[in-house]
Amino acid sequence: SELNEPGTPGFAKVGIQGFGKSGKSCTGALLAIAIRRHFGITSPIAMFDTENGSGYLKPLFEALEVPFLPVRARAFDRMMEWAELLVRNHIEVGFVDSITHPWEELKASYLAQVNEDRHNRDLDPLSRLGFTAWQKVKPHWQRWPDWFINSPVHMVVAGRARLDFAEEENDEGQKELRVTGVSMRTESQFTYENGLLVEMTARQDRKASRPRVVRDIITLGDRFSVMDGKFGTFVTHGNDHKRHLEAVWDYFKPHIEMLDPKSHATVDLEGSSEHNVKDGNSAYQREKKERDILLERLLAECMRRFPSTGGADKKKKIEFMEQHFG
Image (cartoon, rainbow, N blue to C red; front, top):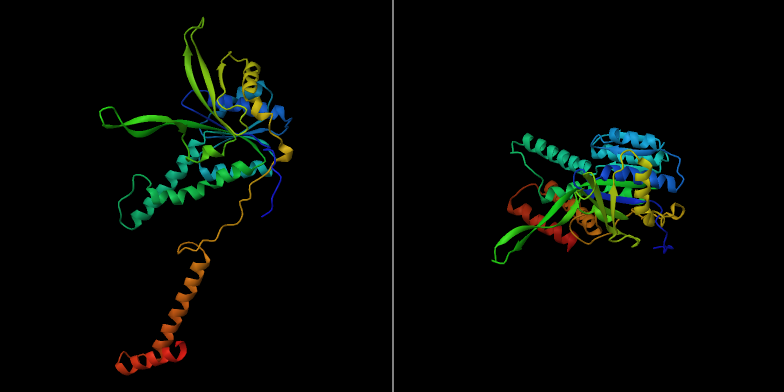
């Protein structure tokens, strides 16, 4: 294997998770605009819109004079087509809102195909995917994180949050479900792919002169370690989009300023490892397959030469095998 000098990550890969109305969409759009401005990018900002939110964001982009190209769809395969289109057309900033829908669509479409096959075999339909099915869905999903980490595109991905539960014993020794954390509602490994992951929540500020909603943001993970645990608050100032943009940039700039698109390094995704196991396309499996083929040919030749099941032919078969194979 070649040993390479470590390259500085070149493109922002940011995940924003949160519950409803926590500010993910607006913050993600403003972050995409801030990234575009910081790197002097001239291509439009592309959005894969699964919730019809682009219509609400359109005035923001117009006010800040940023070209905006939304695509409204939910299917996972459509998202992958969109992603490849960005690279081919040299569009350098993308925004997905929400990544939850393509993941849910991928699961639902696979379940529908499974149930169609079960219907054709007169079997009852499944209500959800089992463990074995997950092993079929996840390799299909893997196309997205592979593209995400290697693409020469700044990507901001918003995803719905979910509560994580675990069974724990209480003081009386009884088991009960308790909330153990919050995660993004998508394939469980995807949050690891983000260079920066933040979580947003909304709350009402009752101490203000007028009741208002503020959005809190906290950094759950920053691979540069310059923003780990950072906490901030975004306050809405009517339609003052420039002020909102400055607030978002002030929060995210320590991470964004560390990026260097000129030294962007990718992960080699080609090739696979050989395993000496019975499953898979290994050397063991190839040899076993060749043995099975030769055995079938040998048995067919024996039947051709000695077709009878009588004692005489059985004896001749044994003599034939001893003569040629010892």
